[in-house]
Length: 146
Image (cartoon, rainbow, N blue to C red):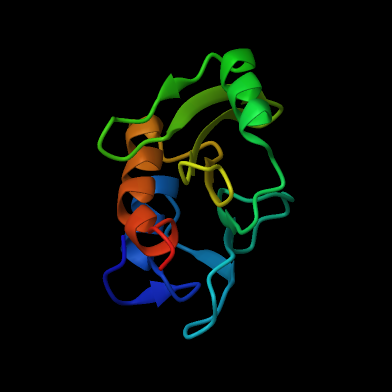
């Protein structure tokens, strides 16, 4: 995920292309050397509005732990693997097809990482892609504060 060349100062172009299925895309958001807060990926030349991949980091999170757990229940989410939790993944149906997302947070739920893949590359396991983004970004963004 973090191999060179990078977009938004943190995400490799290869990881974005693999998860979204896009060869030509525009990634906007955080810049190299800045504090990472977002990366929004859109199809280049598309008339459609909306992101194909959205990665956001909220510090502090605007969503409480209770709201996160309620969302997990509502969307029938599945826990992230124990080695990268706390968090969950879920899939919801939208007007442009399914959206897969993952939320991961610190134990106190103060900081939150969100990954949205809409709709994702054909034939890929989008839940696995979202989990892999979390696995790669969590040590960088959700590491314990010193």
